[in-house]
Length: 266
Ligand code: DGL
Figure 1 (cartoon, helix red, strand yellow):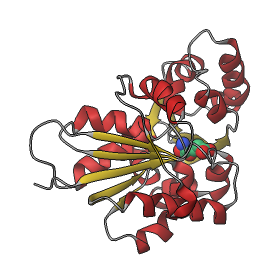
Figure 2 (tube, protein in one colour):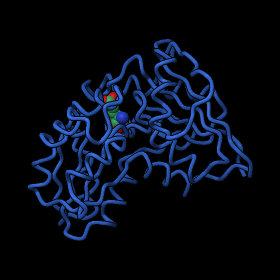
Figure 3 (cartoon, protein in one colour):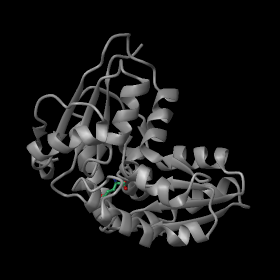
């Protein structure tokens, strides 16, 4: 048993898709969540900036007594995981490896698509991870830069003409490529699951990178004692806006306001 909390962070709200899965499969765990809402998006930034932000996010979380950290952001995982793993005193879990493991286990035709932010796609980390383990795979990656701002604005529902148009525009090449597995390689994208699934069709399995990171933590860390864990939320800007949208991501009510953090001080 280990009752210490698990730290989770993302550039904004996307990492809450990992928290949602953690609440489902490990309700006894206490979680400290940080969303860098003052600096979102990370996906349009250069590697050095993403590494700097990631180290600050981890420095903030490490003030608490933690047993693990989840980088619930593919952009930060792609750019900074190797660097931060070397510097952090507790185990650090990213989104990329668990998502690739899952995709390899479900694909039947060996054609895997990956969608993510510009920085994630530019890094080439998904191709390296997927093909490094299985060189015969066909991997098609695609940046979808408009998805994050649309999700952060709550434009996620079926029937919303804006998101449906953008999904069609971006994902047509993925459909043409004949992938049978699509990694949602950004933790914001599971909010678009319905719209993406409608467009890609029933034969395509969607892999949720936030949920896969949560599954990996579940397998690896010593669990807390039985009983309900507590989740505390912190952001770097607009705590009221965060609390409103957070319930959409979590599919549960977020009680109480999020704490405000001056992340530049870390
Ligand atoms: N949720 C983050 C990810 O998984 C990215 C959003 C951003 O661009 O900041 O990649």
